[in-house]
Picture (tube, rainbow, N blue to C red):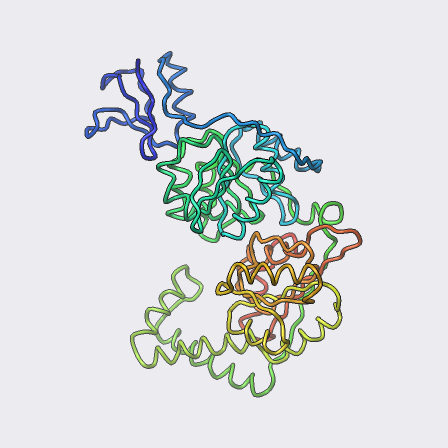
Length: 454
């Protein structure tokens, strides 16, 4: 009898002659191993195609188990969470659910695991999120949970891993899980991360994200890697009932006369070099061209210093630093997160205000202690660059102050999401401090292109 076998991220069809018309077109003949071969991600289509052709096979490819996914701690789902799972089920358990930060995407995954009762692998972009998923699954289902990544390697019917670890190990594990849950799934279309989906035969796939769209357009790849968007709700649709009421406030500050003179001088040096070299900054490769050209001459290197300095002045204008103190005083007693674009500004502000700081250099244990201190009230505010943009649960925070950031809509929505967890009587605030008459004003306009800010 013909046999299906999982092999290093592919599906082999053995025991059938080359040229047999019953073999689905999903397969190609592999001369090296004298068998038909297809990508593991095509497993479901392969099974359906074989049945349609009346070709009986011995399916030895799948190695995942049915599991007793019965929560020992059950949380009543919100209506939109039930709607999301129902929509996902209607699409044969394949698809992406888009919900705002704080809306309970993880509970959607728990419900999906319970519904399918198949061994599941949860993929998350950071070790912080792996830890949160590990705690959630362990306490919800009352079972041991495996971890792959950060020095751990234990594979169990419920396992959590990072994207980095998944694509390294998936060719060996791709048959062991019937359900893949991709947290913050907008990361998945990256060139290497895609392998975590392509080399697995999991028939059920769930993507979770608050910010689906990518600037490079690769989010369209998710249709093939996970499935289409099956359910979507935006912040504005859930605020008040399921998320905290919130207000976004943009504040413009002015440079001092001295700062203005230096900013304009440095910016002119930078832009003159750009114009002289015919560089079009609005084109997709414009800034990359500037970086390459600036490294070739003393004039170019001076232009690069000018570019960096005018950004520094806009990011950390002295008026911003003063106004942050006013905001902290205004919201005294309300847990506050201050976001910056770069570590240098974050450290400068932390020293000025005697606040704890979290950057990519902060150890995991210290990071946990700082976040616990914010939740308990030990710290009224903390400073961070980018590491708290995504995923990390900062449930108590109610005020976000964006001192500086990129033009990314995703980043800005993620920062707003850090303060939207619902709590009785809570009203959240996001302040955006923008330096007037600098490139920061245009950057602010770009990153506010989302319904949450309208």
